Length: 144
Image (cartoon, rainbow, N blue to C red):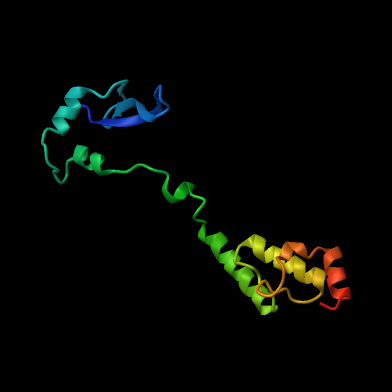
């Protein structure tokens, strides 16, 4: 049974300029693959000059492809976010003022508090990593 192929990209690769490009196409309805997108398929599916709602080729032109939040260092999973905020609240309940809500800032402030023997305050004290056991001992001996 012959049918009109509905193309889709099945594999991506790089061209000679290291641009990310489609390198293999397939058909949505069958297992046939193509190295080049069949021109007649493009012409059939997109033979009008203006945007037509429901036209797949028109929709593809409007898409922006990117990794989005899934591969971003700017966002974090909600579990991690909730844990950091919970740890921050716990530190504040102990009278500790971390330099921020990140796990690193909270851990540094807890360690500084342990070394100092009193609650660390990022607003009035040197950065938490400064307060090693040795420095904290000298700090306390000086009555600061």
